[in-house]
Length: 301
Image (tube, rainbow, N blue to C red):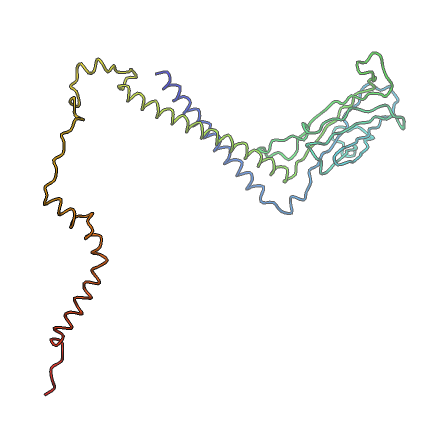
C-alpha cells in the first residue's frame, strides 16, 4: 500500500514540474518574440558605467583621482570627481562591449600625480549578471574596493598596507544580444528539466503498471496464494495422463493411393500446372487434324 502512495506522490510531483516547465517555456518564448529576431539592433553593445561615490582613509587636503583599468576589452578611464546627488556634470567612466564572462577591473588611486596604490583585479561577472526574465533596462551595484600600497607592511597579513577604500557604483545595461543569449540558455535549461520530468513520469507509469500486474497475478490483494491450499478446494483443470494420446490409425490403401498420385504432395499436382498448356495445345492440333473440316466455310453457290 505504501509503495502505491509513493508512486502516486511521485507522479503528482512529476506532473507539477512538467506544468511549471511548460509555463516557464511559454514565458521565455514570449520574451524572445518581444526582443525580435537577430538583426541590426544586435550591433549595439552592452554598456558598463562606473560612478565614484566616495573615498575613505585619505588625509584632508588630498586631491584624489582614480584610474580604472578594464581587462577585456583593454580600456582605461579616469575619474577626477565624485558623483554628487543629482549632479549630471560628475565624471562617469563608460565601457562598451564588455566581455562579462572574463573581464576584470583594477582601480588605482592617485593624490594629484602621486600614485597611492591599486586594488586587486575585481571580477565583473557578478556585477554584470542580470535576470533575462525581467524587463529592467539597467542594473545597479555598489562595491567597496580596497586600495593597497606597494610597500610591505608587517601588520598586514599579505604584507601590503591598506591606503584607502573606494565606493563605486556600477550601472550595467545589457544589450539585446545578451538578453537573447541568456533567454536561450534559460530555454535550454528549462527544456532539460521538462525532459527529466517526462522521463520521471514515464518511469512512474511503468512502475505502477508493473505493480498492478504483480498484484493481479498474486490474487488481487497483494498476498501470494498458496498452490497447495488452492488445489485442495478446486477441481483439477486437466486430468492426469492427458498427454498420453491414443495411437493414430493407419490410413487405408485407397487413401494412400490417392495421396500418392492425386494428393497435394503428389507428382501429378506438381506437374499439372506446367503441363496443362502443352496438353491444351496438343489437343487443339489433333482436333484440327481430324475434324478441321467442321470449321471450313461453306462452298459458294
